[in-house]
Image (tube, rainbow, N blue to C red; front, top):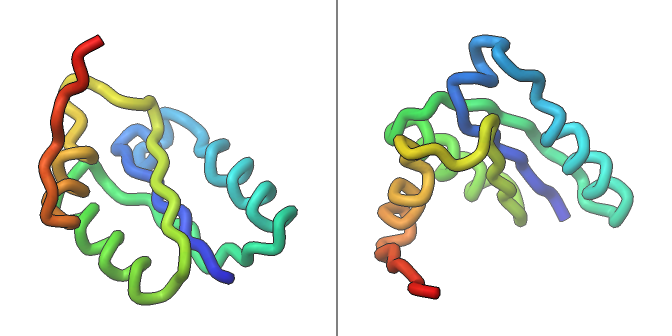
Length: 94
């Protein structure tokens, strides 16, 4: 089984933070016998995210998406992936 890790965030690409998430995830995947095919970092850009996810889906069995700072008010990842899967987001009231 092959996996790709996609990190999304300008803060990763400009060196504002170090991507420790991918290293941790890759190690854990290897521990359970999943080969990491590629780690890709992309900008907070809808087109870039969609292209990266489409390419990963064509090459691997598992796609794991992580970010740099976590969800922010201007985060577009959830809505972009909802579009990719032709789905909608809904709020759960607690």
